[in-house]
Amino acid sequence: MHFQWDIFINMGIISLALLLATFIRSKVTFFQKFLIPNALTAGFLLLPLYNYVFPMIGFETSSLKDLAYHFLGMSFVVLTLRNRAPKSKENDGAGPMAIAILFQYAIQLVLGLLLTLAIIYTIRPGLFHSFGVFMPLGFVLGPGQALSIGESWGSMMSIEGLGSVGLTFAAIGFILCCFGGIYLINFALRNHWITKAELEYMGEAGTRRGIFSNTKKKLPVGSYLTTETEAIDTMTLHTALVIFTYFLSYLVLQGITQLLTLAGDAGFRLAESLWGINFIFAAFTGMLVRKFLVAVNANHVIDNMSMNRVSGLLVDIMVTSAIAAISIAVVMDYWLPILVVSVVGGIISTWAVIFIGSRMFKTHRFFRTLMIFGVSTGTLSTALALLRVVDPDFKTTVVEDYTYGAGIVFVLAIPLILLMTWPVRTFLTGNWLYFWMFFGLCLLYLVGCAIYYIFKSDRHAFRNKRQIWLKKKDGVSK
Image (tube, rainbow, N blue to C red; front, side, top):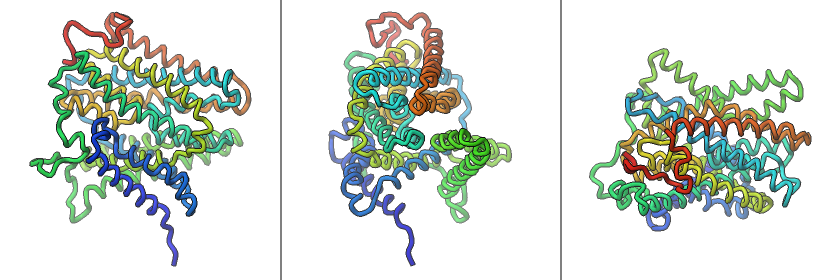
């Protein structure tokens, strides 16, 4: 009797890479100094193996892409199933945090599209018109979304390996987040953007090494039990709830696909593109399940800290598998456009985060700016790692404000995500109207965010334009 082992072989390889990456982080100062996430290290350890070694024994990267695709969807389920904390009086920063995130998304979209135009009319006329959109997909949304949408576009345009292009941008974003974030913190210290007392925690070994010391008397609590273990383990309940909700989102997408195929070829193509953004449907299904649990007074069985553990597992495996799934051959084919868009976009985006953050935020200005920089180049996990350096116990409301802000951004950004196929249509049909309509939509978002920024900056929007960080008389972060 023969059984399929592929998924467990991949999981075993990924697990070994994560263990090895954890050991490296605990021993090598370089990885501690720059807070390199273990999942990122593990992904790069596996990258050459999955490109050159494993294919010789019949192991391809397609199974890794499946892991990244599904774990991304389930991570969005976790995000929406969590119980919402009551708003506190201090929690007045969700709006500015949301607009700061959306501002970065709009900036990178506009930049990416303009740079794509420049590349098409200069060094690579045959480049597909949605190439520049991969920058915000990889930088802001992350590797899972970049892979999922890239594979969907590749299917539509009959171009192999576009998921790897998206993953490459995500990897570059991770590198910018880790190295740029630590440099930003030290630069802020030297220039008195924050006080030295706020950075004293950097010297504690547990944070730097990635594991707590065996001499630490009290370890932090990671989760709480909401069930009797003899009936069902709490982690089993949370995991089952996540997987079942993700299965429901699959049924929803299947139903929508069946309805759209009745409209002919156009409906079929639309349905194909929707599977590329299944994480949106997973999130909406999660919202509905949470509302149902609240309605039947059963939401108390959800422990947010347990959900954080499930999310951590999903994200670590998703990031590792996504990085390992990058096709080096495809990246080499697009290396020059990737380099141009990443360097120009990365510089301008970083400048914009600091300039806008120092003028729009009123409290904990650098903390909020650092958080936005982290999620605009890496993922939430890397952003939290950076923030933990300056706010180790998350005593400020920055994380709470980001949580509410991310929910606002998710709703506001849906039209952008749904209409990302318009530049693809330009490539397929030669009709530039689709490209310019999407560019106009991105520009509309950019203008809207700029208006909000000017309104919230209280006459500081363009004050001391030559200073990237606006120093206020009342000091730094409160």
